[in-house]
Length: 326
Image 1 (cartoon, rainbow, N blue to C red):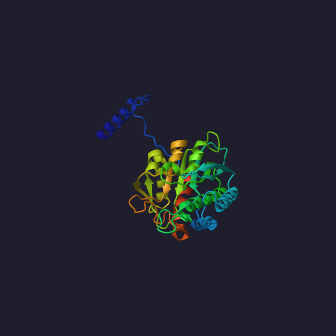
Image 2: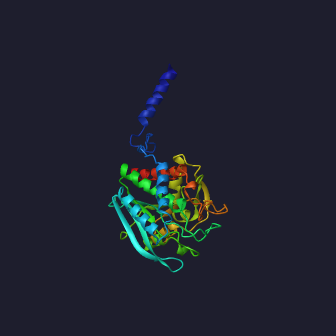
Image 3: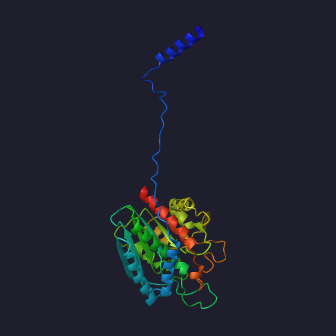
């Protein structure tokens, strides 16, 4: 009993001796993080995207300066007008590697054009005027189902989704022309994106970042983290690869690194100053570097996989709608 009373006295004394103004040991508090909003991601349709590649291939090779090139340009413009808030066709003439001048049509579709917070998605839509990696018919143009057609088709399908399930974020879809009419020096390639980088469609145009698609439709494709993308925009690479893995497409998006390459994103980074990455099937350890049918007449619909298109498209969907939710 005495022990019990002594214990009570000690407790009372300790309590009474506490300084109410003493903050050296404040009471423990708990903090709760704001929960991430639940996002209803649209489902990207790989089969519908494959049909959009077929539509481009049906025009024939889209070589700048040919009737099929102009016909496809008109179709792309009309198709994007069905979804986008605004479509601009940037027209000019550019000089290719052999001194020939060809018409150029950069086709730009904008969603929420008044929103200053923007991201840009792009791909080139022209095709190679010769099959320099083939062993026959080397001087004839290729169909370009994957190299040209695939990236464009993914973005056309994304445009349809943005129409059906709008976002508040500003999104620009850029289809570059005269990308594949080069030979030799790096600056002979990517003439459409080079032109835009020096002559933007809107004065002082800015975007938070850009994502370029090139050769994103082949069977069993693997996309490595390409060097130019890492050098200029590692944070975008991290964002996209994280989205791919969280969406269940880790088998397509490898964390292995690849050497820097020349593609449209190089000039967008260096000339326009917009951090931009390239999702491209490129592996410097393979004999071709790019996918096996690259710049050959076998770059046709037989090489296209709706599963690969789905993996790339659904990854972009997550990036866009996550960005919109921030």
